[in-house]
Picture: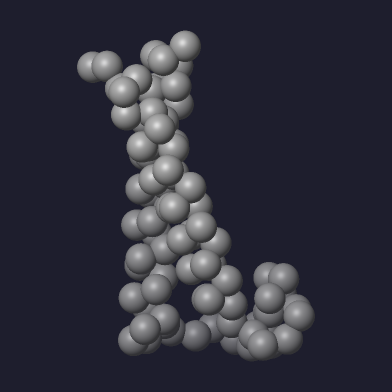
Length: 83
């Protein structure tokens, strides 16, 4: 399968997915303080259950990351075929 003609389009999709992943991860920060933003425990070690919008954003983030991985692999193959 020749993916070389799709290389520019795959690159654009990859950039869009990368920006989407960054935005989704930043929107999911648990704490409003700096420790929560940098990955520290904002809830003092207790566990919480994701509900509503938070659960949906978590699921969308996972699907976006999987799509990013697949598109990155296809872009790598397309650029390799183009050169």
